[in-house]
Image (cartoon, one colour):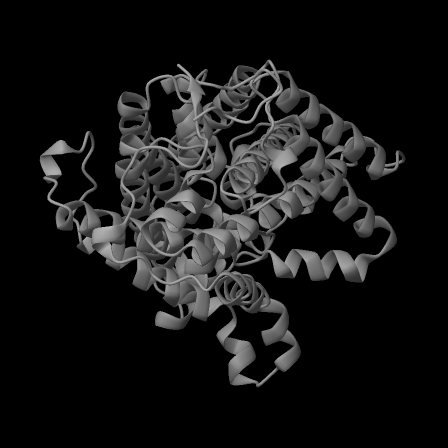
Length: 487
């Protein structure tokens, strides 16, 4: 079937190196550069490592689940489409709109953060000016072509990766005493109550921090429909990305915990405004790098622009996919000659800009929007796990063999079930303290995205009388309604 178009089609322009760096870059940002310190402060070095390893393993299973589906059926905006095809159209509707909303809001958060970061150097210039420039830059990158997005993400991710590698080298040299004075050794790993501080509850709370840090890895599924060779590049990107992410996070937390005791007040920062006390800044400074704060500020500026860039791409493609499925107005499914769904891009930019403006003129509305998008990433992960479980069951039920699949997810069915259970634990554990104190305002604010998701799901289910698709009726044909690409 022909794609809706303005004489254009989606283009398969993303190379393997783009996909690898999009997933890797999506998970390396302020979560690693700043918030990793607060994780060590909360649960101690051992607790932080356990939480990040557990979430890292969960994310690996989710990525292999997504990889199995995306190599068999490479679709733009993939996992919402998979929920529609393999589970229930109502789930696809709710997943797609929920994910689009999350990223459209996140763009505003990221460009606002860019303004805060720029104020580090130019404190007398209003931050909104820098934020507006960042928004325009991200729009232009996404409007040019999918390859311009891929190249921009590739080079911004390279900057982050090089920073982490240099940090690890400097940190290890500091630990053994080659830089920054006498050897520190491993004393700080067992100081006072370390390595595990406070038992299980703090580790559960760090699960949440780790989960937010790893969000963005599912972008590899969004890019599937615009990958040159999805059957080769997606598995390669998944495996290389997982090991790099886990290695970077585990080694970085180990280095920070060795250099700074968990009792240090300098580990309490968790946002870009805390860059002066970022664990990375402190370790570089300890090693004698006088310009540490400026260097890390530049890296974090790159990170937030990269995050906004990825967010713009992800939300645009999800809105395009929603239109293809009939869940959004048809105009958002139109594609120009450069392969860009421009109406979806403009629509997403308008919502992102509106959210940004509420941050300036209506802080309460802004906080409400941020809270409403808070758990969306975890909900998306739940959807991926459920969709993959159903996909594999339907595939076998309809007489297919696993050998037919180009890529096999690891440890099925354990992988998706483990991811499903851990996602539910993390979602419930977002704010256990609020439940203990029966603080209904805090509970409402923290868990707001769950009832919003349920409302979307029930609205579509009741209106269209959908049901869970029987396994023998699941559509395993490789395209959604009207999906086609330029090969």
